[in-house]
Length: 109
Image (cartoon, rainbow, N blue to C red; front, side):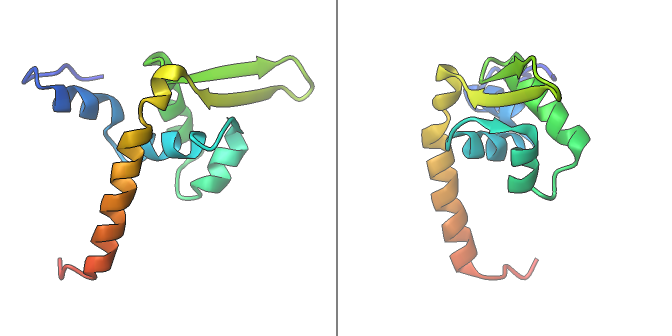
């Protein structure tokens, strides 16, 4: 990941959660533990590669846990950690803001 250039806490959060998918992945994991294909169904526009990369980054940051069960085929589950649950208020604010943006209609951009 890139370094925090300004030292700003908002930049630090955006460094970790920036991009299109990471906060969305966390929002779906707020509902509970999910398997990889559950997340693919929840976010159909995400590629398998991007989901894998973002899950790894969130795991490395300590926001999600990855549990591998020794079955055939292997079962892997993802869940938010206690630190990851701290994203719940952020997700709620983003949902409210998204509803407001949708209500504004087309921006003409």
